[in-house]
Image (cartoon, rainbow, N blue to C red; front, side, top):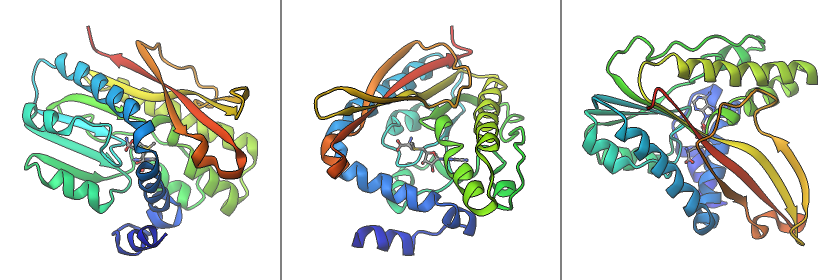
Length: 259
Ligand SMILES: C[S@@+](CC[C@H](N)C(=O)[O-])C[C@H]1O[C@@H](n2cnc3c(N)ncnc32)[C@H](O)[C@@H]1O
């Protein structure tokens, strides 16, 4: 608790990042990683393998753009740094540990940026999803990775809009779907190999291993075809306390512009 509070107080972050909960969630995720490191390792290795596969498809290796970089655990950072001229790590917020890790490579940069380009609008209660444009005109981008990010895009804005602006559930569904669809369309506009790693199905099991809940993490948006998938034990029993349940996400990889 002390560590979390210290991080919250000392991490530089904009008012939007603080008020909408991005900083809180990043710290909670880092704390959960500390407790679940062992069960999350296979997921991180699979993510890194998928990114390495996409790297092999790049004819030139000038800039790699990694969106949703967060805690950097699922990124083969040393290899990206040694093969690419520049590595751009993008997220709403980076904690100190991630910034320090990135700073140990001279060609790796942490960029705090909203990849939906809509969050500021939503912070002010404007229910409008814009088409992201960032980096589309940069013809040196030779690899794009969206990393465990797409299904997370609606969560905090929708919760903010419901709490602060009394948005109803129908509007929430529309905004959630629009954010996911806009990110998918945005990725597909890049003229480079694209690696999309995302959860596809969230499942909860009771202590007898019985499936108790299952939901589509894509808010009903049609998911692109998978080339590979695995289970990520996001919440082992020990994490759920008195709830006594496990949460397992099916994570899948899609590639675009890859032979
Ligand atoms: C499930 S985490 C994955 C993080 C990282 N890949 C990892 O596992 O350590 C999702 C990440 O998406 C980031 N994120 C959510 N919405 C975002 C947005 N609109 N723009 C940029 N990053 C966003 C969060 O801050 C978080 O780091």
